Length: 213
Image (tube, rainbow, N blue to C red; front, side, top):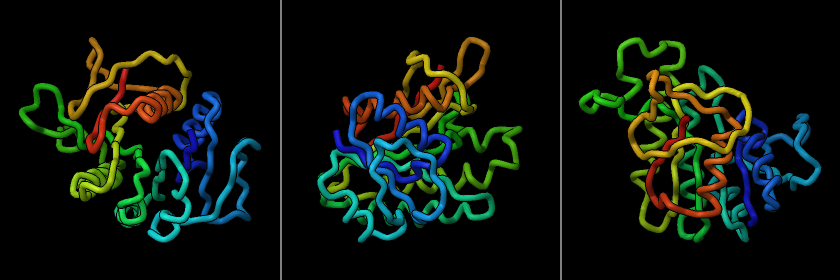
């Protein structure tokens, strides 16, 4: 497959690139500043573009099978996530190219919580509340997209950290997945596996899914 990745130099984006390459796909990485060191594999094709610009997105998406976005704004710039999402949706609309987004866990429903989302639950860390709320707005924008956009939104487990690739995890839809101890976690490596599995074998058109151990 021909897969383009926005946010390819980020923590999750790098792992998505590595997983896609390991499966034999042709990967294009989008960078805003080609002068900055990126340390991406030599097999990756680099293109310059900005997710916030619909014309860039449309140009870069042309001829691709899927576009993945794993962008994350810097702390204090969480509002930029909505801007980038609007640019991606506008650029992809009507192209027939599938758009897969790595989002946040905050909007997942807490099991047994009567409709309470993770970000609304007691004890949710204040430090990550701004990005969690921004990801919730991001999901709302996807859900409001027109029928001419084929999107999928992947929410990770509550705890997402670098780790190992096991290839073993569970998937769900809108409810937070927890293990027998009440822990919700997945490695960035396995989140990339879940994303590439969905890219190769689409099962969640115009909907959200989640992955956790």
